[in-house]
Image (cartoon, rainbow, N blue to C red):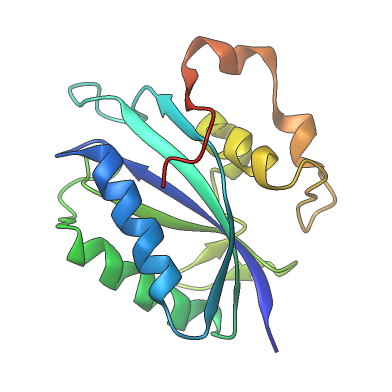
Length: 165
């Protein structure tokens, strides 16, 4: 049985566009997964330490036959292949892949919190999700479209109107 999932992608070190392109290619190659759609590309200011470059962000919609923990393991393998080193929370990174939604499930384990704990506060997640599914509803019933507010315009900007991957 397949589960529809949404992933957030972000990069701000090295060549962020190339890192996100690498991520999409790696996600397409995963066994037991099928890439369904990729959002437009967005630029955003960093959350966390201010002494880091701006981010490029996107989201993907996929189907997977893996459980959430197996999916996480495979996503972390992709991050490591892209040179990710975990030095500080919310620090600069070559590639970040977050599980935003895993079907309609709420998961709270030592390794995972789904929906992603910061999903509702992160414009660079909300807007790409809306690209993928304007009617998307969170497991708690909140419509993602209701999270997109005018304040987002100050620190996020559309980078690519057409496919970038």
